[in-house]
Image (cartoon, rainbow, N blue to C red; front, side, top):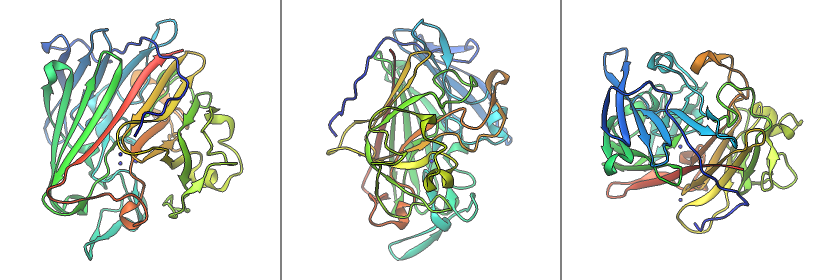
Length: 379
């Protein structure tokens, strides 16, 4: 689904908390970091579930299978906790196939047209897994890898590492990837991505969490109020591949520069909304220079829960769960169409075939670096 001066939207930040959906850990190395078994893959690989806890009792649970964010519980304005990410209670749910709930996406997040691109005069053919296109890294992307996990920073962070070998899913170069989840005492869940390669390649990493700030499984997200810091977006063709145009959001249902309900315009007879069955588009973020910038702010009015997304990336895919189709998730909750939304920070889709887009090429001796923060509060 995939680098500034901090741009501030009006926000009321408060104290929040998260708790893991996991049962009490059988092993614990510190009060801030715990580990427990999460099952085995079909090939017998052991998978773990790790829980980060900050000084306020805020927790986030991540598995090293796909680097998936399994659980994130955030209080409403009355202090009542609810899990705000879609997913499954057990590893088996993820092994059976799912729409990338909570996963690390790579080697290339989002779509590459016709599952091919040319780099240095060589055409690379990828694994098509969405019609003729390559989506989210192919048939076995990073979301299906078992990552090596390590506690770091005194239990404040989980470091996941993975070596994507030359030729994996058709991509060139041995790519050494590290993804670090950290949780600070300001209630920010931070994801840092780094990668190096021994051969010219393309890289676009992201996280594919589906959020519902009313609580996972608690109905659709159409009343969530969204602000996106973007003057332009990348319109798509019938295959959901960007046309190459950077189109102004002004006068369109894609103008979220001021707050709008997700459902306010999602069913408009707009060609782009019809093609995506709702919002499934990359927004060109407004930013000056490098560093973290505020990309989006989402408010769930009934509960008062607020999520802000800050990133070093130039783009963000806003997806409204248009293809969710009665998936039974955590606690037996059924996820239907538009029961979750994604804000996938990224470089633009199909950038390997669009030289006018920001480059996604990584060369030997360079380091890919990307950071995204999900910051929670109430109002």
